[in-house]
Image (tube, helix red, strand yellow):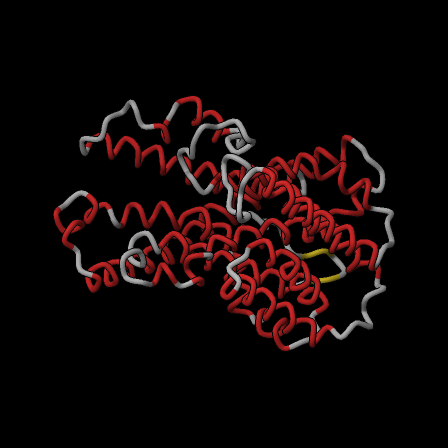
Length: 365
């Protein structure tokens, strides 16, 4: 999942961008939950569920914007000290939960072996892919299939962008572009569309195969959107109206046109308009409950699929899974959502937050 950075800098807070991150994460939860209930009921044919994976594309563009918001000025001069500090901060942000969830998946693997599943011949659980997951390189275009904690594919591509970010920030840190930066963002998104079309893909949906391409162009577009935002040259635009235009555009592209490509510019406009924070949409998404959802969104994203898999084991390994009625599946899914919520809160309060604080104190930050 990716926009897993702190949405603050000393001079400014952007609460609506934290809130939209939470909404996007919840949307991705709906995408994975559909395999347990929506399929076969007609719900999976509704675009809201069918295209809920698009929340990840929002993460990627948002990540570029927010990283620039927090760290762009750190790289007006490229130094090893600034680069090392940045990488360490990102490590402290993503690795505790990543290692925690990977450990759960390892335990889950051996649990399924105890239930009778073979240890060998399961491509998801290869030893080489475990090492790749450990170092977050599994989605850099070489792996033959999804592996271990499947959702960590996006954290792998985010890690790739973290390693590139110091150079990106150095190149962008002195730009004072307004409209020109938006044009560059549009060109980056166009390159994403062209690249995927040349690869034979009809949407932005790609994980371990071409996830790095998907992440790179969206992330860079988010960086250019931030350059436009900080220039101060767009403040006279009608942002109250543009908030609604971006929302209508995004919903129309996904739910009526069913085109993730057409939705990309809408995401860029939405992020920019929410950062401006002048309209009703940004005020609503900036409400404290929505912002809190954004604060815990990384934990939510990383644990929800594991929890759903574990919760549905009793159905998957018994005759009840074959004969389960829609009513039973729905009741089980609601119970699973409660477990997801409880696990998310526990992970955020006992793993993600304290580990991040400890690691940063350890480095004197």
